[in-house]
Length: 185
Image 1 (cartoon, rainbow, N blue to C red):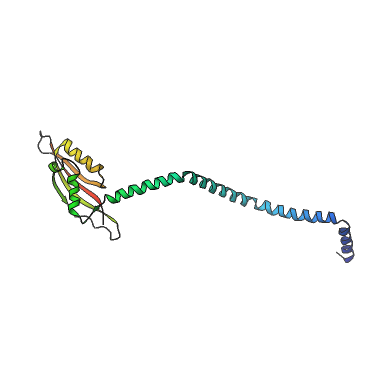
Image 2: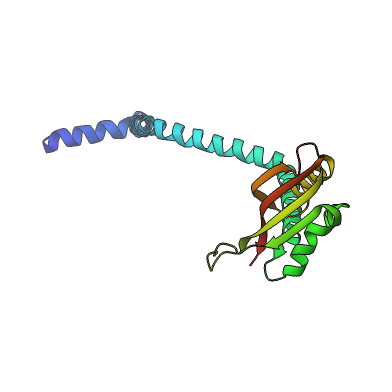
């Protein structure tokens, strides 16, 4: 553009200030609209993520008391388990547990001995202590003792067992058990 055309354009813009301002404003707003339209997809994704976070927060706030109740219950159960663990070195108390578990224990528990346990890792907090039991009595006595053993406060599992009758017509059974009891190191 030459200087004459520039001066004519300048005088036109000065005469129509309102039109000039409106034109410049339209160009600026059009550019802003174009930028926003390009960014609308990413804004929708961010909006969807924030909505999901809000919904998750709502469910957390609603279930907060339930979670606290469940945590307290779990802590109580862990405390009961910890209080019923045997101590590996306290053999007398460990053996006495098997005698006091059932009223007929002194009559039917004919053989009880501690076995050598597997070597546990040095950093382990717990270990399994094995015991061998032999019970001799009627089916009701032996079954009652076994039920008490399974449902008692100590955590244990039966490693092996065998039933046999002392004689073919006798109501007396002999039960051999090997159990492992969870113990604190």
